[in-house]
Length: 412
Ligand code: PEP
Ligand code: MN
Image 1 (tube, rainbow, N blue to C red):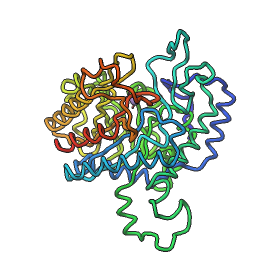
Image 2 (image 1 turned 180 degrees about the vertical axis):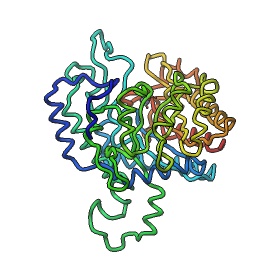
Image 3 (image 1 turned 45 degrees about the vertical axis):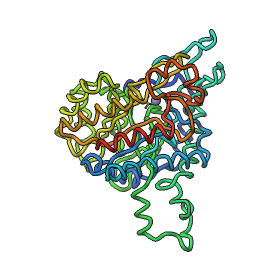
């Protein structure tokens, strides 16, 4: 895709070697699409159902996915977690679910500060495995362009381990691109699996990576981002005159935009107009991440601003990013009671202002971690975060994620 001169792009790494960056981008441009345009359109169609209140999205996974997590066992554990959460939604609300992983490409992180001090040493921050490595050493923190190509390879591995779509068509389905196996499920069984597809998503942060994976869309024309079915734009890069919004406008994928407490109604109206100008509904997902204290005050005006697009844009609640608090140790944590409170406020605001709650955007892991705590008081307990393996933000473990999704589903 020729974008010409790029608009101002926030949060891009200071790559250590420009020539290597050019080589990496050239290499990526030769690679096959990671996901198909057809599956991206299928997700848009499913998101349109969520916009009409006929389905509920569960989007979840790591804050920062590690390359090593593309191992098949880990990917399948995450897939199963999403399926379990979707099944809970079905049981408790009767709604179909739309399952979207923060996986197979969630390798880049926006950061509040470019550096951090570890043991008296000032180091560049960790920006995700596609950029550098979290170990607190200067070599590890160099922004290495060769990591962009590794990110592609790990995303391809993760997709291959995933069920539908993108990779294999199921545990006992045909191999990717392989011949139909004898006894393979027929078209009907496949279409029922298609309904339970797990789609992939990540933050479209690194524009060198995303632009080099743009491919022609043979289905409806134009082009699409082939790195994931859905991309989202983060709270720190959603400037209307910035390069991330401009990039996302030019691809056909479903696009999410995070909205924090500083988002105003004019921003939301402009995003709706720019992303939802034509084509079928489901193109734009607005992801509210206000924090439990701000949601009731800030969200209603944004819902009103998007009212002309009701039934076309999806409203999701990310109850994680506005509720980050320090544990006594200094580590980031989140209190489940706060997270629940934001979900409650989100659902109440959507209901009051006549829009459908489209789903949840969560940071989750199937691993038995203790990164988020139950109550505020737990933040003072020295032993509250004993199993903490996140490379970035604290995630809900399986039990916490199920409790939260059940809480939301019962309120639907
Ligand atoms: C994230 O989803 O990990 C993230 C950085 O979110 P936000 O852009 O909403 O802060
Ligand atoms: Mn995060």
